[in-house]
Length: 477
Image (cartoon, rainbow, N blue to C red; front, side, top):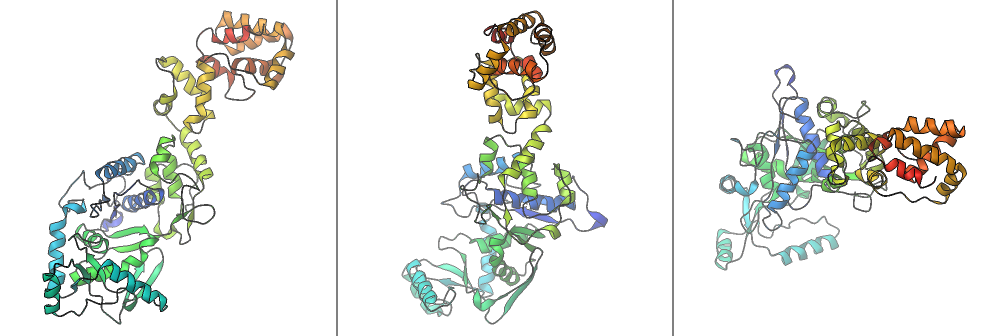
């Protein structure tokens, strides 16, 4: 969907949205839906959509993941106006390259005494957490390093102790904001606790880098999963301390399986790559994601611009969205039937025999496309149409025996004379046997395909190599 897909109404400021994944694994359906919703939110009003790679976790962030993630997004039809491969004055769009900006903002917080070094070890923090839980209190940082004197801090630094940088959360206040999905939100600061904004290795923590980048990149609306809802008050505190503008935040309900549990492999495939490799159409998956947690009065398969016009944050649900792969198959069927001949050839090409000529390819696809949902559905028909004589089951053998040798002698002779022309073959058999209806056509189908059901027989015959129909019919004459 291009940047010019929609125009802003009435001269209103253009919205700026973003998708900000961490490249630590595959693109899962939940994140893909978040990306799609942010794209549609921007495109609906002619705004800008940004892709930011949050790769400050150097141990887990891999370039291979970034490359795959961007490929999966583009396959889904999700493109961006600025990103790591499309830099502009707001970039760079990889957080690993934004360290200088973060250092300047850390210095501002330090000058305003809104942060302090914390020398607590992981063990000390875990013991404190357990003690709070045992006392029936919510676990949060107990403030052990909050009020250290300059001398105490200098002594710890001289000992070579690694220090994180914690944000000094004001006490006895409330952080309030309007979530554009869930409505008014209010969080007591005493329940938040001082949190880390800079790790001991000097890298920016998520709360900090995510919020600062949204402000510096001009993001106006941050739509993300509701698992981030409790992060928002911390980020609003950071932005207020730095005097930076905050985006409007909205948190969409998570995707769950049919049993209500978080979506996992026991429910279905969970990564975009898996659906892509199984032959799902990107438009099918996009249509399914569009309706997961977002209601729309529009039915039927929607194109990208139609989805953008129909997207409305007022229609985002607060209840978990249940993923149903059977419904995805409905969208897949619609998307397959809408494929152009060229797209259908590309979709089924990996299954077709090497060296198949264009005429046979087109005939086979024309025969199969109305009857397949996934490429695997076509695999057995490749063997049936282009391979050796298909084996018959017990029921098929009975059909052939009842038809008799005379039936197949007439059919084979007609196939030899007319090629793979079903009307000519059926007409010759009718004249020779007097059969009609199912009694006429079922023996032909069984002898030619080995099956009693399947795609229409006439198009299948047109796809078969010359002489193959005659050979299959003659073996029963």
